[in-house]
Length: 258
Ligand SMILES: Nc1nc2c(ncn2[C@@H]2O[C@H](COP(=O)(O)OP(=O)(O)O)[C@@H](O)[C@H]2O)c(=O)[nH]1
Ligand SMILES: [Mg+2]
Image 1: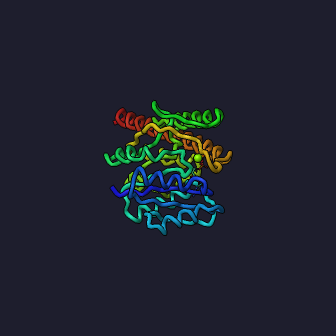
Image 2 (image 1 turned 180 degrees about the horizontal axis):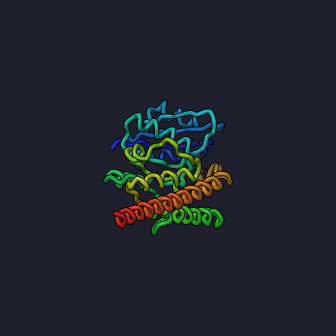
Image 3 (image 1 turned 90 degrees about the vertical axis):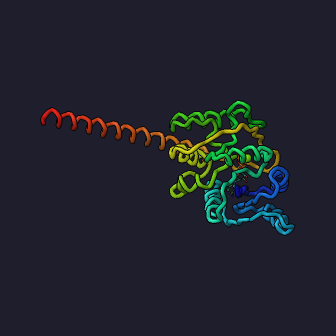
């Protein structure tokens, strides 16, 4: 399986060396793409130094910070054009331990369309987050699962493996969400296509260096979109039921009149 590991960055100079070293250690020789949005620290410089030393890393430099979802969509399109079999999503801040990658990739290799590194299944955990943030993430996930009818415990997770045939099947055009909503939207699209999703337990550790780019806007966007998709589903289900009942009634009148 030809795999591309995608590492999105925005000012991750304090972490990028550690995460790239760890990826090297656990999945040596795998292609890596760092997609950097407008870093003003040494992130790009540190990546360029590794490239100069001959590491299999591609650096995509974007002039503006356009959000995590937009960065992944950009990287996915490049991966599809280059004919990779699978892509990995992993944060640059060491919250996602590259030691789990061999297991996640093995599951994808068996044909699972989407493998999620999950915090909220037995064996998974979150370390170092304030109680408020864990609560928000946990209930955000429960809300998304209920609204969208997803049998998935961690739909906002950012540690994933997609087989590229999954990305082709769900189509990247028209993806609306940018932040946590992006992860939920991609999961929802995968499930709606009837494709397979497996959650693997991970221990998520809050970053020890650098700063989080999470903000209230990202949470509000995810909440609004999940609510909107959920309601749209409900109404389209009602419309389908009504259409079905009307068609059935029509058939009944036709058979009594004939
Ligand atoms: N390319 C790119 N990467 C981003 C952007 N926003 C966040 N990231 C990266 O996405 C990953 C997750 O972001 P982080 O701030 O750790 O979010 P948190 O874990 O939810 O607090 C990190 O590797 C960030 O550097 C963005 O706009 N563009
Ligand atoms: Mg983080």
